[in-house]
Length: 424
Ligand code: SPQ
Image 1 (cartoon, rainbow, N blue to C red):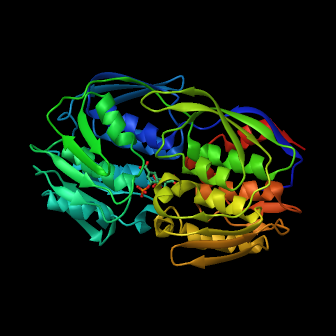
Image 2 (cartoon, rainbow, N blue to C red):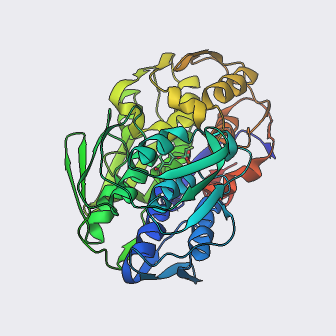
Image 3 (cartoon, rainbow, N blue to C red):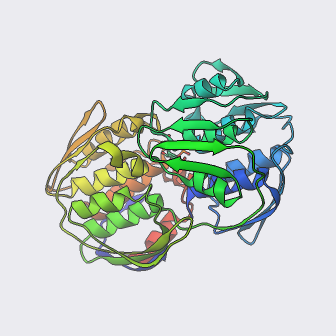
């Protein structure tokens, strides 16, 4: 795909529905009793993989006019799939399913695409085995893995990494044990599972970084409306900040505090980002107004990292256009995403002649010089493809993005939305 620099972004958009919340809505509705209805569900490939897996597990799920209807039959109604559960490119589907399948009364095998086969599963398998899970694989830490459902017992577990997927897998498993499961997070990660379990009638209590799952309660079907994904909005936020003459409104973006690190960091870099029409609720949301701004480098590390982990590639692009040095640290988790996002961003930013150096846990970017268009690889990673597209829109000269189709996993309409507000 060829991309030329543009004169500005102007107008009002909505962005793709939240991917994390979409996955969880299917999973919890599938084990709840009664009908659930999900509106503004993300029809990206990752979430469609989740739907396919649950259909194979015997759940009745219908997609009508972009809305999802799920007829849940309760916690113990999932059925043996009788075939492989294919999770595509989705880490969330793979890891959360490990937790949910471990306490069932049947066996199932999980596998995904080439990228999933490189993503570590031991972080989930180890604590689940402490709970008594029977999990085996032919590939060590990686998929394919087979989970032989069995009765589990509660544990108290201190997580070695801040990972919402690990936390959520343990929460889902914890819904099936007799006693209370306690999970201690090193840093606060996204809390959509905790909020949604409680929204379905479950009982999870959270005190600082300690999450306690009380398994006694039945879950009941719900109506869920999913807000826009701040991780998808991030590309438009950064684009509007670095492309001159831009002013955009992004409507109905999810503003759960465990996800808004990007707003905090960009504001610290000098960004104009205002919030209007804030709606409080289980998952708060609001409109974001973003205007072109002069940015300066900052240090990004510590407890903000899990609150913006998926936005770091987009933030690295912002850093390339910001005066001075941006240091991204404590972000080694970037190495085990759909690609090694530290290597990917270092390599691609260098092609644009940005001064950048990778470290063991992040990147050092010296910004504010001329950024040049080039031929960029997407690394088969949606977030790298969208980040380099944003860079290309603000760079000097023509760029090419190879394999932009990978964007479909989280944002099938990305380029349509971009065209809506592009001023050439
Ligand atoms: O689902 P997947 O492939 O892991 O997606 C990513 C992404 O960029 O879309 C990560 F590559 O998001 C994860 C995120 O990084 C989604 C997620 C969730 O929904 O629970 C949590 C984060 O991962 P982790 O490993 O920190 O738990």
